[in-house]
Figure 1 (cartoon, rainbow, N blue to C red):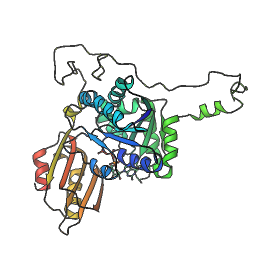
Figure 2 (spheres, rainbow, N blue to C red):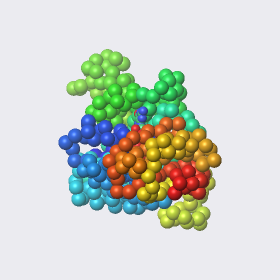
Figure 3 (cartoon, protein in one colour):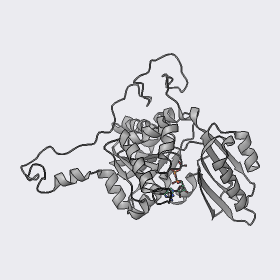
Figure 4 (spheres, protein in one colour):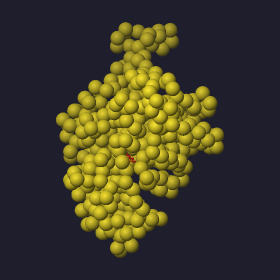
Length: 362
Ligand SMILES: Nc1nc2c(ncn2[C@@H]2O[C@H](COP(=O)(O)OP(=O)(O)OP(=O)(O)O)[C@@H](O)[C@H]2O)c(=O)[nH]1
C-alpha cells in the first residue's frame, strides 16, 4: 500500500520548503517518491531534490490539468510498479487545481495499491486575500479541497495577528472542515505536521474520543459506540467525463482545445490562459546588486505585468553562484554551488517578455 500525500499551494507559497522539512523530520526511513508537476519552462525545483536522492518526474506541459490526467496517471502507475514506495508525494503546479489532482489519483486508485492519504494546501498568509481576489478560480479551489491548510510566512513581521485572523476567515469561508495551521511551521515538528495532515482531528473530535464523552456522558469504547465521528468530506463527487474537469454548469459545445474533447469555456480558464511563465537559460554573470535591483524592479514596476514569482540561479563575477527566490515584496538572495547552467524563471499574469529580457540583459 502506497500512501499518497498531495501538497498544493499557489506559486511560491512554500510547498518545497514544507516538503523538505517533512522529508527529513517525518518521512525518515520511508521510501518516498516525489512527483512534481512544474508550471513553467524550466523545472527549477528538480535539481536540489534530485541531489537528495529522490526520484522526480517532471511534466512540463502547457495544458496542466489535462496532462495531469493523461501522463500523470501513467507516471503514477509506473512509479508504483517500479518502486512500490511507502509514500508518494505529489507537488502539483502552483497554478493547478487541487480537485484535478485528486481526481487524477482517484482514477488510478482501482488499478494499483494506493491510498489517498492527505491533501494539504500551503497558503502564503501575506498574500491570501490578494490572490483570492485576483486568481480565485485556482487559488480558492486549492483551499476548498484541502484537508489541511498550512499558512506560511506566519513568522514574518507582515503577518500580524489581524492579518492571520483575516486569512483564516477567508479560508473558512471556503472550507469549514480543514485544519488550518497558523503556528509558524518551524515551531512544529515534521511529525506533528504529518499527524495533523493525516488525522485532521478537531478539538471537538478529540474531546469526543476521550473516555467519558462530554456530550453523552458515556464511554465510547467497548459497547458504547455513538456516532460522534465527524468524517471529513472531501469533494470527490464531480467525476463525469474523466478529463479531470468540472463540467457541472457547462454545455458541451464543439470547442476542442486541450484534447480531452470537452468544452472548458464559460468562465473556466486553463492556467496557461491566465499565467505565463518566462524562462531562460543563460551563461551571463550577475552581481548580487544587479539581482537585487532586478527583483526590486519586478516587485514594484507594474509595467512588467503582474509578477507572481521569480526564481533562478546564475553565476556571478567571482565564481560564486547566486540563487534567488522572489515573491512580490520579498526576495531571498543567497550564494550556492555552481549549477550546470544559469537559469531564470519568471511567472506572472500579462507579463511583458520583451521587457523582462531587457531587464535581465539577455
Ligand atoms: N519567512 C518564510 N519564508 C518562507 C516560508 N515558506 C517559504 N518561504 C520562502 O518562500 C520562498 C518560496 O518557497 P518554496 O518552498 O520554494 O515555494 P513553492 O511553493 O515550492 O514555490 P513554487 O515551486 O515556485 O510554486 C523561499 O524563499 C522560501 O524560503 C515561511 O513560512 N516563512
